[in-house]
Image (tube, rainbow, N blue to C red):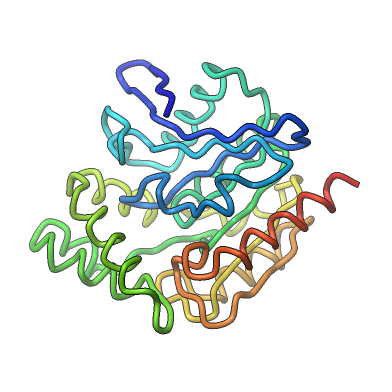
Length: 255
């Protein structure tokens, strides 16, 4: 797994390279997560070069977490410059989707297209999470875990997700959620000119399906894929459905 220094941060990332690749994807995880939230079906997508990174303070990356979506977007642009990626498709889950939207609005030359997974144009966070992360971190992780999955998810995946959250610095997770809570581009979606695929689970309690529907209705070149019964971790709950949706989208924007 390569590592790239960006200032005082050291960014780890997994990379899959296809000799016949027509697209380059950057997979951007959500609050308190790591690149491990992306299933192999996406990390090893045929016909694409795929980079799945750990944001600073997350997973195996060293450095400090950020407290705004803009700061995370700037970090990724700097990382792209350092590893020689002039432009890519930004694939974001939850907070990662907010980062991708911000990049499309503020540095569109870096964004070839968007894949927005279980996210929204505004990401207000429940006070139960914002206050609980300081008051009782383990209990709040349990709450986040409870709200993150759809009907009857595999117990192994649920426990692994919970373990990854508990292993992350509580201050980093709080910073992530406060960055999400302050994020709001609802009035600017019409400015996004990149093609966009929006994926949402119908049983998502963190970012309900109406968030995905709003994105698809207001981004000019957007299309929506609804995944029935899936929760916030839709790409882990239904990896093949999500990967096929992305493959089909890539084929369409290549035409």
